[in-house]
Amino acid sequence: MATTSTTGSTLLQPLSNAVQLPIDQVNFVVCQLFALLAAVWFRTYLHSSKTSSFIRHVVATLLGLYLAFFCFGWYALHFLVQSGISYCIMIIAGVESMHHPMMIITQKITSLAYEIHDGMFRKDEELTPSQRGLAVRRMPSLLEYVSYTCNFMGILAGPLCSYKDYIAFIEGRASHVAHSSENGKEEQHGKADPSPNAAVTEKLLICGLSLLFHLTISNMLPVEYNIDEHFQATASWPTKATYLYVSLLAARPKYYFAWTLADAINNAAGFGFRGYDKNGVARWDLISNLRIQQIEMSTSFKMFLDNWNIQTALWLKRVCYERATFSPTIQTFVLSAIWHGVYPGYYLTFLTGVLMTLAARAVRSNFRHYLVEPPQLKLFYDIITWMATQLTISYTVVPFVLLSIKPSFTFYRSWYYCFHVCSILVLLLLPVKKSQRRKSTQENVQLSQAKKFDERENSLGQNSFSTMNNVCNQNRDTGSRHSSLTQ
Image (cartoon, rainbow, N blue to C red; front, side, top):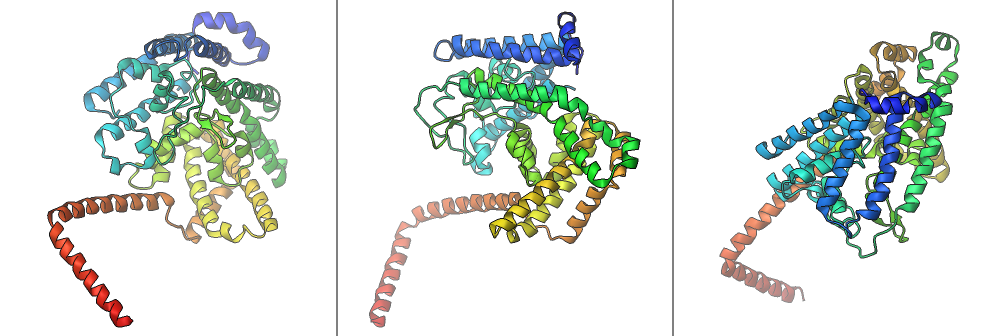
């Protein structure tokens, strides 16, 4: 991570030595705990019912900038420079525009740019339902923009949220208007502002368990041992496969900790309420970034990706996949690699991910419908696909952890590139069905054309009302004659 401030390093060095963590990680945890306390204070004393949205914007921004300066020193000026330049570009041009906070801000800037573009420069019929629901219809003020990108709840670890959801929270509308659904409509409900205490407590418990697991088990099962020469030379294939899965399983809790804590901070401030479920229980998962149970029990590559880093997946879908004119899967994975940084391991992981995703999609579309009945066969299928998915994911993300090119290729060579080869063979041998995205795109185009045709017909019909009446009368006469003949 980036260079830390001198004051923060001096104060927290003993704590760093005690838990054997790098000082920048300790600073991050301490700042997030401070943000959690600030979130409780923010919700209690600066609730939208007690103060103006202007005050809430200012306080959220100032606290966010303070945390950035504490953690990263003068490097935090990059936040302001990037945000300021991007805001000027949006004002002048009309919209378009390594370190995790910078990655989050990049997501927010590009998301907002496309949301403004959709709301101010495109017609509604050209938008997908989700784009229509998130479209921003007016240019944000500078304060709103800086508050959205640099607020204390999400400046260090996110998660990403839409601009409309954030502004609704600041202005006190989030408890009355649920999150925009996929059809672009907003669900109204009149219940009182719910308490996030239960959700925050549950998420903090998950954070504690994840941190404990990371500080104990994770250090005992390093991913680097997968490329140890002695291990490669002596271990059997079942042993290699088991250790590969277990070592990557042990590497995940640090992400569970960081993302769940960030989610809890937002919830403690009152942000993240999605609405009520069918049982009347409040849902605080509007901006949640992961679903741990679904991740660990994934039976397909898609299921894993849909539940891991959820907000980033939605960002990639909205700014790239839905807008790509060709090879959307490849473009999306390449963008994800570029966004993550410059390490070669990132590119190896995401390029491998392209192969795995396309191959998994082909296998699933060709075989799954034959294996869902009877239940016993479905259970066997689920067990096999779970094992295959977990092993494939582990194989794919090893370079993401190792980062460098040489150890990454050392690992893949030790496995004889077997998953790469299998994926290529699957793509060559199995028919690939048309993706749902292409079908949806074609349907949107057809609906748009049909709408325009109907509008033309309506305008023509208004100009030739008497002619249409004559035709209708003739049809009725013909119908009555036909009826009398058949009788």
